[in-house]
Amino acid sequence: MNKLTPSWATNKVREFDGSGVHRVGTPGDFASGEWLLSEACMKGMTVSKMPVAFDRAIIDEAYLECAQRRIEALPMFDSPATPGNGIAGLFSREGGDGQIGYVEFTPNAASIKGQPLEKIRAATHHSALVVATLSKSGSLSPINAQHFSSPLGPPVLQVAGMHSEFLQEQAADKMPIKVYSAIRKERSESFNIEACSRAIPAEKPIVIVTPRTGWWESTAERAGGLLAWLAGVEIAGRLQNENRLRRQVLAYATCGHELGHIGLDELIRQRGELLPKARYWLHLGANLGTASNLQMMIRADTLDDGNCMRDLLIAEGYPADFVAVEPIAKVSGEGHDLVKLGAKVLSLAGSNHYFHDANDRWPGNINAVGIVSISRAVARWVEQQAG
Image (cartoon, rainbow, N blue to C red; front, side, top):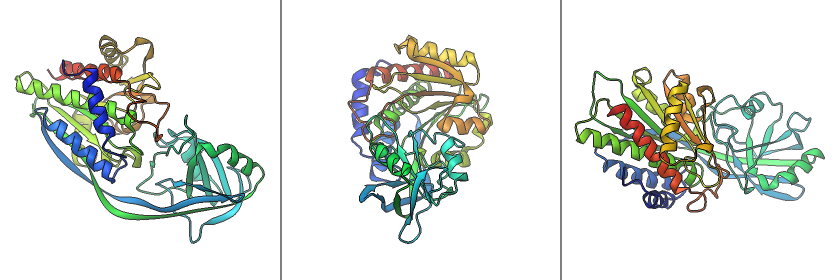
């Protein structure tokens, strides 16, 4: 673990950030995926791609017009396009009597299924919805498309939070508004990355999973989890090479987190036997090592397991005041899906003032020392479990 230093973290995060916007199916997805594949191949485990086919949503145009003002928008990727030339009518707060409803949500409004925005979309009487995404910078911070495979409700257009005051006024006055979105689908393919140590049939394996794509560069959101994932892969490869491996380690970096976890769905389709078989699924979630918010949440099947990971983080230098152990019921993202499917899960997730924001970039929002602490703790945990 001597290689896991702040300079190592800084260099790797810079490389990840430099590969471009990491939205699934884009050049930045492929570039960062090849980068991660190359990094994993140097760790001593068997590494391969797992293709993930999907219908990529391509937005030709999306906007709203109100009070002689045009605002560029982004449709929710799990909502339908507007028909014909768009939808026009009176604007009101959601639940009011306007044809088009207005709501405001933070970008974590669809971290799992069943949250309030989803319930509004399923039940609304409005012909369309406008959502202002509220973030620290006021920029557009897209909300995940949990129903990407089966669009939900009416057309939904997302706009940057900087427009919220204007839109509140227009909705309060029930002003005329027009919304328009043109979306087409194109068959595409991304990939998960799979790293496997040698099989040890008599023992239950350890599975490490982390998402690798996001709406923008999503640097602090994703990079810390990816580096901790690589640290786990490296220690497993070392244990294998030194003939100290007593439990198989399997590691997956999945694509399509922002589109309803399509990469995890494909992983489960192909490796579903691991759900009950694995001793533990270690879920490395979002925002592991951000500079804007140090708060870290550990969710585990048992309090003892959560406290053990907390102790490892603190021993590796993560500030104790910012580490909380919470019930597994609070787990989000892919970890939530795994728990629902019956897996035994230990999940790490952080906090990020620039979550889903285009300003989540290196170097401003990166805590290299925190990433090192997390990566070293994950490596020690893997060594304890598999060595």
